[in-house]
Image 1 (tube, rainbow, N blue to C red):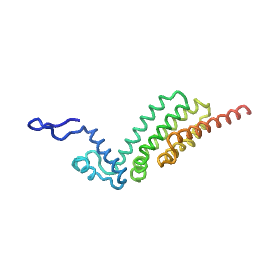
Image 2: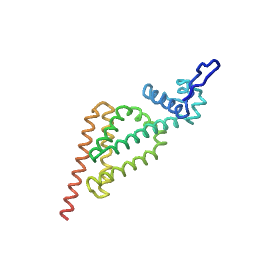
Image 3: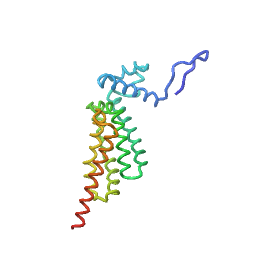
Image 4: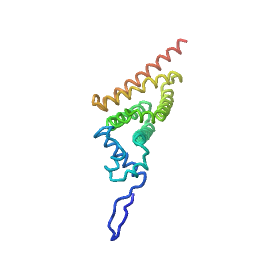
Length: 212
């Protein structure tokens, strides 16, 4: 970011870097959604709100849909980056589930209303569908590897278990976002359900192998 100088050494308006300007527009869109709803978002109004020209706003985002998709991408990219850090910090499978679950629950509490509003827009959901599917598959593969290391389950059983259990954290996030559960209570519940189910499944497979 830099400040232009005018005659006499006085400071003129602040000029932002392209990245900072883009973030400024996205931040303004997020505030508008949270305060006034998704329908209130428009590029021309956002430009007026932050004091830039309409033409400048359109150099960053071609359309309202492009803006909303970019905002959702930023939210998801930030969550992925923090999720990876949380996963790498875990010393055990239980720690992995606890760290990543808590991160998701805190995100749901703090940003859930914004993400839910963005996903409710059919155009945004359509634009993001392929990327979201790809990210979900990456998450499934990561968790399947972790489950197999911890519980020694067959590949097919591990995949099925992960796909069945992933919605647990999603539903817990909704409960936190709606104020039904605290983050602490939801975290403990998710951990109990996920690790308990996997332990029971592993025990059943051990019993099958021993009896065959």
